[in-house]
Length: 133
Image 1 (spheres, rainbow, N blue to C red):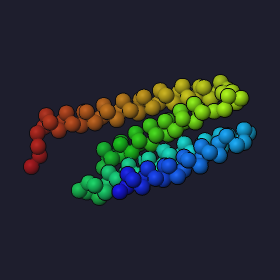
Image 2 (tube, one colour):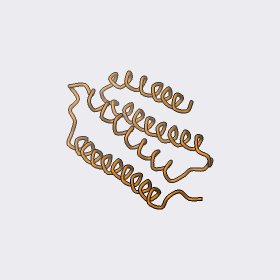
Image 3 (cartoon, rainbow, N blue to C red):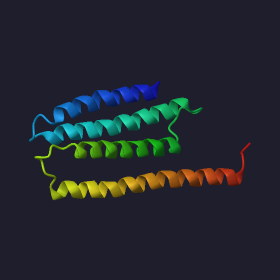
Image 4 (cartoon, rainbow, N blue to C red):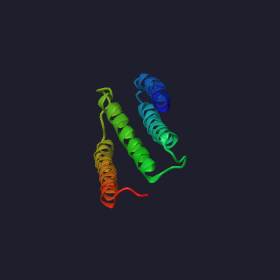
């Protein structure tokens, strides 16, 4: 249920943001930043609430937080790429925007590698130590 709610909230935020984004050229990034930040926050809290509600303990576990942070960074990055791909052709990207995109690509790669690396390490340790009684 939480995933459906999160998906609907994402659609309700991204849809109007994209439709309003091309209306004024001077304030284009206001709408884009609102959509990117909203997408990241909804993904973070949606994944965190879903993961906590389906667990046996109703507290935030480290693996839930890692998953939520990875979802936040990845969904924000995908939203940013979507907005940058559909910038009107008469608005040129300056060097700062290109630099931000390049640096953010490296950060997203690092976060995703950390998520999968730490998850693999934890699962490997659990298999090596065997089930706990």
